[in-house]
Length: 355
Ligand SMILES: C[S@@+](CC[C@H](N)C(=O)[O-])C[C@H]1O[C@@H](n2cnc3c(N)ncnc32)[C@H](O)[C@@H]1O
Image (cartoon, rainbow, N blue to C red):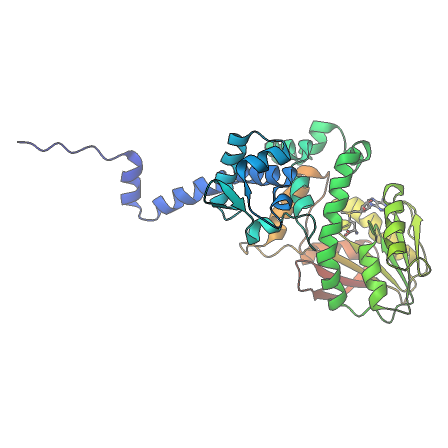
């Protein structure tokens, strides 16, 4: 009697022909569904689940009622997040935090909750869905969708501004100590932080350089919260906040200028304007420090390469740069890069002087 054998499925045939292909297909499925996972994490952060679970286990009913979610739908989100170690289910549909979900608590140093919520700001999330537009045109999908830059958008949407400011503050809470460990600020008497945000980096630098004074130059929207933070750190007498557009002018005469996460927001032409306005403000013995990520060489995995896509999609002209790009940019702005200092975080420091 002839035996009937089920015909192998096309995918099984392919896997047998190429032993690595089953693995590759599994990897591809995991990678392409990353956006689903990403949105589930955004939802968990938005609902504040990690904060609710900070001290004790909660049942799914308690969680759903506390955060205003539909119980079954919330359970399904937590079930999926459990696959990657975010929240842990215990007996009786109870949940507790894991080390990974703890990063979403709002009350811990270096909290990632605001950074995650920033990914979920409606036009930011939609802009990623229009990345093809950015790749075909080289233009920001965010601008295409909203007619605004991200900074313009948050100017009109205070709830989004609060999320973005708080994400930047959390990032600075991690980065500023690493920068202060990597550079000796003690020689400078006057330090200007151009586009200094809420002032956390300047506060850390002034704490490490007790004889220095600081000026934070910002746009009007950020000035008040910077004054508040510097005052709360007891630095009101040593630190001043100046509102001035650094694309027009930079406060003159400091020993040291610093710009963190500024140049990567802009195309080469405007990045050059920030740098040449610093050069014009500097004395021959002044120094400028850029704190930026440096794009790793081809094929070397590095977060800078993903961040570069965020810049492509969400910022008009924003981009990450290689060391050679930075050297060229400095030179075109009348500056010479003198030292490149790694930090124990993802940022490097590029020190320069006037040509
Ligand atoms: C990505 S944030 C970085 C903030 C801060 N340096 C940090 O690393 O936390 C960019 C900052 O640049 C400021 N900025 C943008 N354009 C500016 C301009 N033309 N002049 C001065 N500041 C500017 C923004 O207000 C914002 O605070």
